[in-house]
Structures are given as C-alpha cells and as structure tokens.
Image 1 (cartoon, protein in one colour):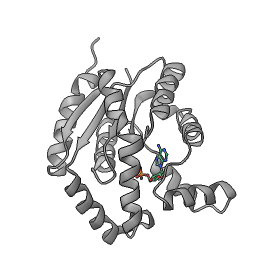
Image 2 (tube, rainbow, N blue to C red):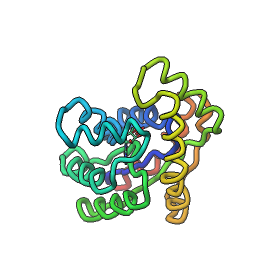
Image 3 (cartoon, rainbow, N blue to C red):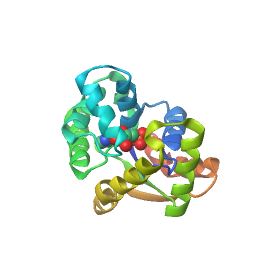
Image 4 (cartoon, protein in one colour):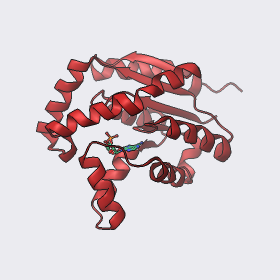
Length: 196
Ligand code: AMP
C-alpha cells in the first residue's frame, strides 16, 4: 500500500527538513512545491517572472497553476509508492484537489497530515536566522512577515480541515530535529507495516 503524507506548519517550522528525512527513510519522493517554484525562477519566461514576483511578495502562487504542477508531478511513476508533500496543500482548494487527484489517479487517500507545532516567537527567530545563513531572497524582513501572514490567513485553516477528516496528527516541533523525526516515524509505522 502506498503512503501519502502531508507536512503542515508555518514557514520555519522545520517541515522541509522532516519531509526530506522521511522521504529518504521510506524511499518515497519528497514533493516540495516551493522547490519546484524556486527551480522555475531560474527560467526567463513570462510564467517564471510571474511566479518570481509572487514569491518575492510572500504571497501564494494561484491555486490553478499550483494544482496543475502537482498533477503533472503525480503522473511520474515514483509516486505510486507514496509521497511526502511539503508546502502543499496551502489552501483548502488545494487540499480538495489533492484528495481528488489521489483518488482518481491511485484509488488512494491521504494517510496523515502532520502539523509541526512551533510557538510564534521561535518561528520568527528561526526564519531570521535562516535568512542570514542562506540569503534566501524571500526570507528578508518584510517578506518573512508577509509569508507568515499568508500562512495564518490561507493555510492555517487546513488544520481544522484535516482535523475534521481525522487526518491530523500534531507533533511538538520545538525540539531537536532527531527527536521529531523519531516521533514522526513512530506515528507512520502502522502505515508502512504490510499486513499480508
Ligand atoms: P516554501 O519553500 O514551501 O516556503 O515556498 C516558497 C514560496 O513558493 C511560497 O512563499 C509561495 O510563494 C510559493 N509556494 C510554494 N508552495 C505553494 C503552494 N502550495 N501554493 C501556492 N504557492 C506556493
């Protein structure tokens, strides 16, 4: 049985790091729409310029474009084994689309939505640090704030969305990376245990 996992949490919650670790451990793809959009930014096309402008504002790329990109990605064979989604979905429309795509393409449904819970002050501290280390263009002052606002307004409603559907598993994200990975793996164990 394939296992499909969503990582939820504000920018700076460490969901990217955890998603990569889980993908490696279980040998399934890590699907980061942020990485996919960043890869596009290097291109010099009208669409790439539009995406770049949106990212630099800390806003969200339109649902239609994001969903289409994920739909294409799900067409690749590796996804049949499962996937760890990181930074997708970010709106309820995207969450509906993900459920629909998993059903139509694989006859599957999402298994778990992990929420990495990190207190607001800790998030702001981490993002500031990352901006200094990586020099990410979208991590500078004002943009950091806007991305956080965007999360609160457009993505945080997914917490209730997945809680209502019995998919939400909350994890304390204000701990060392290794401890969090261990808990996520323990929670995923039932989904990777083959039963005949
Ligand atoms: P991330 O690396 O996930 O923080 O994403 C970086 C930026 O890419 C975000 O601030 C958005 O501008 C854009 N982005 C990434 N994923 C999505 C998504 N699922 N929907 C809309 N925009 C996205």
